[in-house]
Length: 438
Image (tube, rainbow, N blue to C red):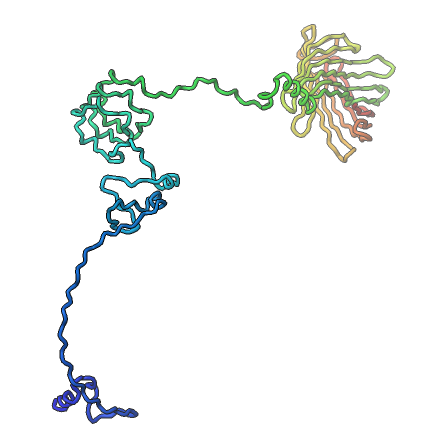
């Protein structure tokens, strides 16, 4: 402790208290201690009293353009609390809205006649409406849409004295009213001026006509458009066509009984309605025509593949000649089978039926094989025509044709026929013929 006290006496400022006397650091040379400075005398504190000056009222001018924009207001001889800034509006008042700001949507200009209480939320539920003189109120200027009608005691109001005619019911937001909480039973609806309320008239104009597939009829003469439509249909599938087709026109070679056979038809009309003429028959050379017939039929399409036919049939062959009423169908069955079926009712009450079918099997582009079948039925025996009841005739055929042109194709084949009843018999024959159409 003694050396440390000596050090303090030697260095009263305490600047070298970290060095111990008699010790040297390697590589360092201790500087000699400076003599201590003489202590300074304490200076007397001078008390300076602040000089209070009277504040001068500063009035700065407010340019006209700043006044129009609402940045400041003319001083009017009063001190400006904040230079360059407009004074704060008094409580209960709204700042003015310049026209430039109103045009930009930054604020709204309040009309001069507007009530100072606008925008204030009134608690109508707490008001004593029973004691209020509603007759003297200007209900036309009141914003009823903003009122909380659910909390109002309408039963206590004197609705008879209210001028409902002056109210702008069109501007009232009735959807926001809580009508469930209103006491409508206590209202005096008889004295209300509902006649002045705005009512939207219900439209009575006739509905527009239903749209059709011909929109041009709305702008042009319907008669002219109907004629144009018929012409368009005629040129796109509604035209008249005609065809004559002999599916069979052949010579049948048998043992000493050579004969001939034909089966064809012709038609004229469109895709829907047609007039059809059919004929078929057979005979032997050096003899009269054995059996032949002609049919005149009206044909109508009942779908894209089938036609319904009706007409008359006349026999012109050697047996007894008869006239028949005919009804039948003709069409294209699945797998491209051509099918015909008909019922015949004679003028003597005899009922016959016939069905036939064939299909063209294309071997090449020009070689076509056609199998064919025909079956005739009778509902009763017909003695003068040697026809028995049931299946009266059955024919099978197989013919191979070569189309030199689509309209002309010679063929060769085999024909087999079997007859039942009093004139039973039949056999096979070689068929040589031509299939043609034009």
